[in-house]
Length: 474
Image (cartoon, rainbow, N blue to C red):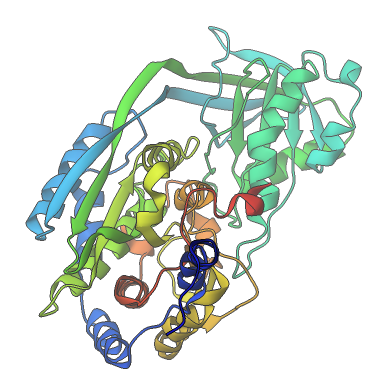
């Protein structure tokens, strides 16, 4: 019998964790079969639609810190209990309370016209009685960045950058950059106020709101024009005649507000302290009722969990659903969750958040350890009949709020929704229940049910640990 000396044995022992970490994560054939049944069952289930219909009808708009914030939390807590989750709780989230009271805009010269506009989140108010100033227009954010500050003193800056509709929604990078960064740039250059063409792809006379960021800058009044009104302003600017606008925005920050993430869980049968996490954000902007952004996301996760709960036996790991607080004004719920759970983030074996509406999922991507890549391919194979393709080369960040959780170490899967129509309605009064196609919503639920169940049943992990994905965010 071979006997190892103590030193030799000590040298061999550290290899065991390494071997375990490199062991391929796999999913049993029986679990793949169960997931296929879950997929087909979810295509007939309306739990998600009932959730969206209920919260948009009974609560409506859910501006973070607004009058419906607490009402929405209590509604969601009651709904989670009614659906039979094993555990429901909240975790506090604190953030600045921004308030919208009224907004008005009009062109005074060279031709008087009213303007359809909406104040941006964190916009400052205009002085009492409003603000009148000449407009200076720019076609892009880069053009504003290059402008001489001397030409902008006391002026209203307008940026007219346009978005186009794409399935992957990539042009939102253009619109959101103008909205979030443009007002601060204009402030630094001495402008009195800021306007932009709405970050959207529609032609409706309904402006798109959204947050801006004045970090390091003095807040100024900032608002978005509807697309037709942006066209109108551009035509007047092109005439060469001075254009004067009057703005009256009554809005601003009123101290701090403490809301909460609402969390529900189906407890696992073998490893209940480990979990798959999914969800959406509970808050919405206030012009519409927040159906696609993002009641649908919370509903999809809830519907998927409900289908899994109907199995004769719970999956090995727990299934966790999170309705995140105040995503719209800075990912506060996701960042808070990440901070609260970062030391034990390895327990979150995999996660995905839905925050791009309710149209069909068309692609799955993931950021997992190499030894778990084949398990993602197994999940993707069960999703393929839903019309979902797998891109093994593109990473996944988990989606909106869960991107913050991914950044501290959670392995992530992204289920990409078709965003062709999404930015027609995003952040507008048109974000209402009628924009949701029940059949497409059910396809989303099926995809999340498959992914959650198989991740919870997998033999092995997906690479979650503190700091695991730090290099992706450098």
